[in-house]
Image 1 (cartoon, one colour):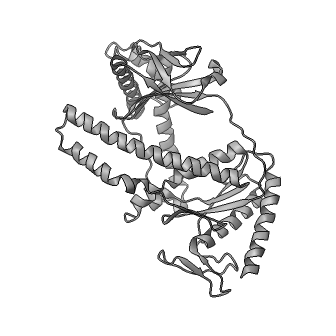
Image 2: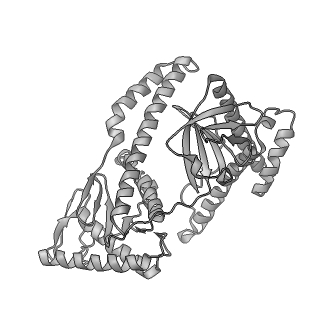
Image 3: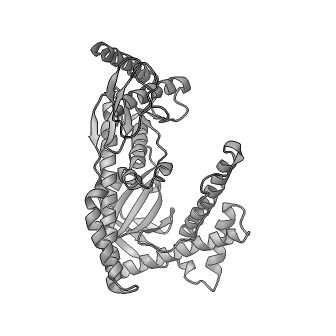
Length: 414
């Protein structure tokens, strides 16, 4: 399943109709959640049936204007939040000593925000033959909107489009197409393996000693964000000036979000194309941001987005991507295995056992590479590993031999 997005050119009347559809979809979602909280729904199918009750209710005549598939999609979203809540509760019960730890994520009622969406299935919309226009056929009367984007939908048949979403953001209306297509690309083997040690001073340090600077997009745009936030706080609540100021602030945050994503996508793609085997430390960012002194810098680094795209491109291009536990990777000596305790301020690894000296991040990345190769060899690519190629054994032999030869070169250079 792939998702293509295009910006829609909408008139003021169409924007009003889109906002009505978004409000109705949010009302259906919140009503389904209330129906479950009252104890009337036991399964997701019960919520789907309740959407029909809402549309037939004379007290809510606007619900029937929304397409039936869109109502069912909002019920599915409500049930997804409920299922996630039960899964989190089960994980907490299965924790060590049966102690309930962490937040459960109880489903909450949502209010209409700047970013909102409504999802249609295979009805309620039609696309033109040239794939440049889309028409929504429900009773809200949104009508036809022109699509502007770089993706060409002519490569796919209409029956391959399984879902269509209308997404509202600070800079306009977007239409997303969920297409039933499995993306596969072929690359020639490079015989190279890499491991990444993620950090704040440098975004990552690989096992070859290359370092990539942290872009720090939030720090660079923080002054403009603060200025826009001050202007928003000075406006009276409910005024048109406040709505404009909120939109300006939302556009700045949206630009920041797109900068992070674009940078992470390009770096992840370049890494996947340059190595057959990539290992990275699986950091628990949710727990790390509890440190209030480093929370802003950790959030600005966007490690989670980077690793998600790394795994995705690994599946697409048939590369082996391994998530390694970061435990003891900074303490263990990559040359002899002796443990050397360090503080965060200690940036150089000096082993008293074998006198091996290296950068702290380089030493950690070599340990991650060794642990990743060992994990892949022991599990045969089944646990904690993302890969999508039948040539994984061939890649493993090449990267293992490459890793051993590189270790011998390091020992000789010492």
